[in-house]
Length: 154
Image (tube, rainbow, N blue to C red; front, side, top):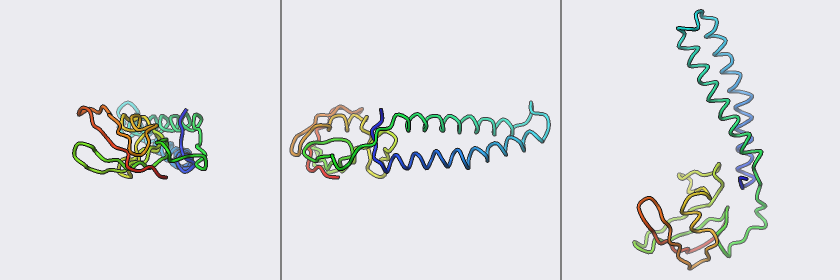
């Protein structure tokens, strides 16, 4: 089951609709055009179009699976007394004092550039359930880090 915000769910639905209604017909047209050029055994355009079709169908199927397993979180019932999914968490690295802020989101909504980390990452897993002022000892590929929860918000 994949927990996500309503916004994240709507984005996935929009992407699925785009892939099915726009991209799928484009690829079908490219395959038909390449097929019309003759011998398929030596037709690189045809091979490329068929490969693109396979990748597109894989993405569509993955999106359908995620959407089918999605559980939309009622944001009105979320609290900020301890870290949970959809919380924005301000952290301080105990060792060097560096501050960072992450929003914990579902796997499909994760985007590090926007400060959104997946609930399945080691950092998010280590933070879940922590309260303001608590320190989470988290094992990351570089070793162990200690992160203090400074603030929890939406």
